[in-house]
Image (cartoon, rainbow, N blue to C red; front, side, top):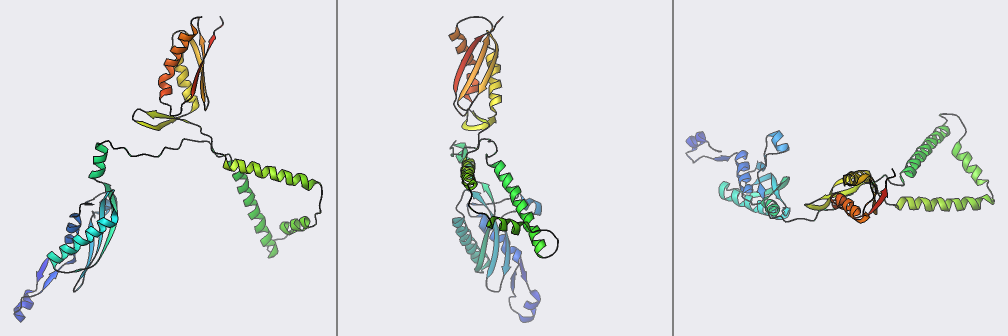
Length: 311
């Protein structure tokens, strides 16, 4: 780290010179940065591949000052501007006290972040953060066929425009479609069929407007868990119906069950083996499918219909 020029000292009788290598400056800067609470050491990701962990520094030593590029890893969450100021202050103070050279410029670059003790403590204290509600699976937009047709139309228009360009520059032969079409339209006069055409255009425009703003149809039903009110699993209405039918079919006195699931209702049609009290069987079926319905994120009206099996 320190090199004394002994030869110069012997010739001149002086105390020699002090040479501080850039690597020594870099190590001092790294040690000073680690003294800041929100700066942590990191050896993962790209740093592991390159063999250069964080923080690391690239120093340029001048005759009277030092410039440093400092790459750091910070804990999350933190205020980056405050940490940067703290790093600048600590590195400048350490260089001045240990090396004796003032800091000319320090560029702090945040290369990585990691969860700090504050986040771990928050998790251990079971402090919950409001999470956004996940989007349910949905069907394709109603405007998808229109968009596909419009895309093909634009491709056809581009082909016609390219053909017109080649005809104008005498690259290919043929009649110009765009010019002839415009000339034919220009020769049109008022006719009664234009009223019907304008009405049809208005209706088509309104239909396209409705299709464009129509929301996508939800195709799945969310299922929650005891630890979260947000949907964790998405099931098709068919899956819900099969689960309800299976549970209802296990009730004594039920021969078979068929379930229909809609957006607002769940209807279970029960075929019983023998005549009995309708209310008792209805409650038994309702209790059997209750565990399945309790995990659904969307509440639906449950209907039980009893039918006697004909012998």
